[in-house]
Structures are given as C-alpha cells and as structure tokens.
Image (cartoon, rainbow, N blue to C red; front, top):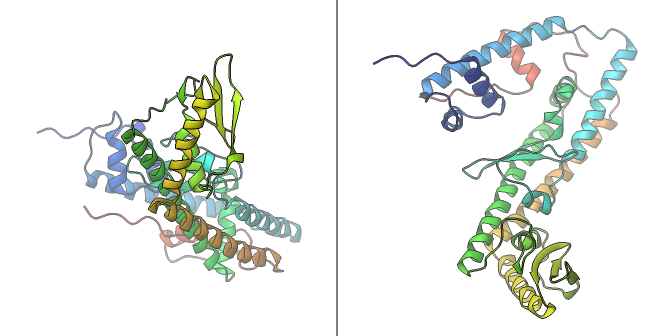
Length: 340
C-alpha cells in the first residue's frame, strides 16, 4: 500500500490557520473533511502541531532579539499610555451582542463588528467568540504587553475574568441559536409557513421567527398593543410590524389581527421556556463579569506608575529555554498536544 502524499503548501497553511484559531487536533481533522485535501490521521496533525510550535518559538526569539530597549523617559511614557489605552478599549469591547445582530446573520460566517465581539458558529453548534482587539493584528504588541503588565502587576484575575467572559458569551450565543432552532421547529409543527427571503407576500414574513427570538432575548414576551402597528406596504398589501420588524402581510388589516394574536401567543410560550431562562441567566452572568472586569481595569489604569512590566519596558532576562521565552511573550501556555 503506497504512502500518502506529503502536505502541499496550501494544506499546511490551512492546518496552521486552524492552529491559530485554537482548534484541537480532532477539530482540525473535522475541518479538513470539508476540503479538497487528503484525509489525515491524528498522528499527522500532531506532528504538524509540533512543527508549528517550534516555528513560533524561533520567530519569537527573533522578535526578542530585534526588540530595542526603550531607553528614554518619553518612549517609556508613550508605551505606558499605549497600554492604558488598550486597557480602556478592552473594557469597552466587552459588550453583549444585540439580539437582532445575533439572529440577522448566517451562522457559519465570522463578522468583525466594530466595538463589539464577533463570533463563529461551528456545525456542532458551539460558538467561538473573538474581541475586535484580538483581530486587530496591528495592536498585537501592545495587547500582549497589556497582558504581561496585568499578570505581573497583581491584576492576573482580570485576565482570567476576560477569558471567563468570552466563554460565557459563547454559551449565551449558543443558547440563542438553540432558541431559534426551537422556534422554527415549533412553527413547522404548527404548519406555519415562513418564507426564507424578505420578499413581501400574503402570510407570515421572514421576520416572524426573528421577532419571536428578539422578544425572548430582550425579555419582552408580555404582549403590549403599542408594540404592534399596521402600515401600507404596497397597493394591495398591509404589513404588520412588531418593534420595526415585519412579521406578516395581508390584504386586509382584519387578517393581520389573527397574525398578531398568534405572535402574542408564541411570545408567551417561548418566554416561559427553559432556553429563555438559560439566556436570561447568561445575560446576568455576562453583566456581572463585565462590571467586575471594568472595576479591575479602572483601578489598573488609574495606578501610577503603571503596574507590572513587560519585555518592551524592561530589559529581557535570560530564559531557561526557548519555550519559556515564548510562553512569557504570549502570556499563556501553548496548546497541549492531544494523545493519539
């Protein structure tokens, strides 16, 4: 039996990008299945990860060797102000995505929203959350410097809480998508036909399940007449809106009354569901963590001189080995290699 061909440059780039996204060996194998690349064993992925980690250490050594020491007071002051600015930006970016943002975009894509988290939903339903600060490669040196200052300056708990906030946000978004799946399943069971496009025609509109999910996430499941209104959509169609979302169209306003009644009933049904409680609990958890992180970062920014140090404001000390140097610069341990 012949040996499998060696990896092409394109395949290696694909695998390394998976490593950068934080995927495990098993997840990388799953991602490869949807490509034109040959099927691989876990041993192959494990070997590629070893090469990848070694290359990162070499590159980090070069960066350390090339980094010049900040020798003037002015340079040191600018560096510390840059760290403070990134700390302020981090605090502002810890925002829960709005309900309509969550449900208005396809799941399998990643969107870089300005000033708020972006996310990717996997085929298995898990969610990976990234902050804009992490996606801005131009700020990588200052962001890593911030992590080092926080960890060495007595604010390591703030770093762990940011990770906890991202995990909680991932779980919160996963519950939101489970809600949307449940809404669609119930509508299907009831024989409610909802179009996939926004094209207006008599019947329920594409925004009908969206409006239900938004109502649940925002805690607005109690029916209030003021939230519904009719509008003349075209020469022959009237539209029914709930909070600026078209949920149905009909030739008479009387027909729209029935659609409003069904929407009210379903709002109450889903508002008392288990997934609705999970979403509400997740939102409270996120808010609590956000306040705790904000208090820590405010204290960090207000402390003079700036707490802690990093390799950019302190001469680099010799490390026991290259791996330790890489870990110190990155502010975390390298991913563990999974057993075969």
